[in-house]
Image: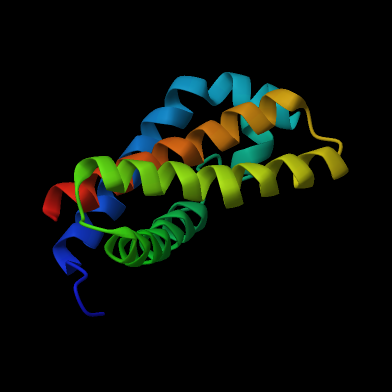
Length: 135
């Protein structure tokens, strides 16, 4: 991966994963209402959340950081502004639009779209900023 900083990708992945954790800690009750589930339904009979979704999230955000880094490098100089702008455009063009369509066809509550797409906006903007910071 020519011209892509591996340390930037790892830092962007960790930062965005932590942003996601904070996002859903802050909005957890609203999110559960939006999906129509209780905490008991989410954790299952063990009473503890499965680590699998957290691992999957981290790996997905790693892939996002790699792809975003490639986009930032190809869009021009890797600066904080260009990273944030590229992250925003990726969110607007691909993530938000896909979520809106999927949530509307699925009959999900509009608040779920707001919460989840807001999370992915934060993820991509943070990743872009970190990637740009590393240059």
